[in-house]
Amino acid sequence: MSTESSHPLPFLEGVIAPMLTPIHSDGSLDLPGAASFVEWLVSRRCVRSVFARSGMGKMFTFSVDETKRFGETVVKAANGRIGVLIGSSGEWTTRDKDRSHKPDAERYLSQAVELSLHAQKIGTDAAVHVMPEAYVPQSGESIEDASYRYFHTIHEATKIPIIIYQPGGIEAEYQMTPALLRRLTVLPRIAGMKVSTADDLVFEPLAQVVSGTSFALIAGNENYYLRALNQGAVGVIGEGCNVYPEILESIRVHFRAGHLLDAERAQADVPKALELTHGYSGSVMWKQILKERGVRIEYYDRNNESTAPNEAVLKANTALKSILAKY
Image (tube, helix red, strand yellow):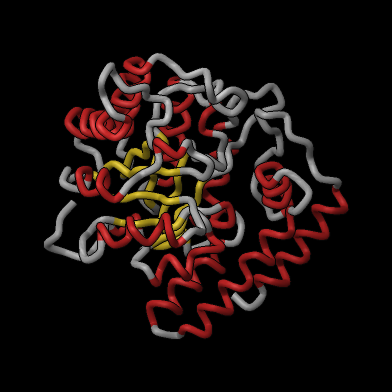
């Protein structure tokens, strides 16, 4: 991370869509559906990058081979028109059901290096790595030192920018601290971090560490986006980036122009849009809405979450169109 310039890598500014993962009814990847989704996101003209194998896309259900094939499809579909980030952590397919059952630590790290090198090979803009909750420290090693060693190993083995991802609900001892962030930002290709929180006590200390540098701090909670921009964030990764990126880009544009009332009005539309899937699985219902909007995507889900009734989908889609009319 350079301290000579306050400009982050350009593909980390603005709206970054954490792609929903198109799958078939048997749970296999729907790669043509993924390409169609990328094309639709490009057509919005306000999405700066896509994040493939994201948390919203059920990243922990991916195998190493699936990550490679999905990444190749997304990079080819993007074709340089928007940035591409790929979740490159190792396999931990039991996480969503049993977080206590962790993979072999060194295998997990080896896979992270392998996937980062593959992301580099296919022309991805950055590799995303979750805070290494799966990485058990060696005997006598602190969790902070193990986390640093994890990221340092990946950094030294690759030449691709690395984005750190702290999802919501991560074990407290694996959460990023200002001290660890200071150590990591000395590494030149640790380029940014997505922080999924709406808590000033979590976000602000990290923002202070990277203030005035080229490190890209990214809001991972879209309801907190304007507040995060005020603290130095440069972009947002949230579920709405997949469906209503126009609202989120409007927040940033108005904020940067000094039109704070307009930014606040746009921010106020975010919870209205999020509320449209209340009572249903967002990762499924958004697929249903996207299908209504012309994306060639099915609504199947690897965690077998239920679909919303068709009338609820149509009602939500109509309401979303009304919200988006001003954008």
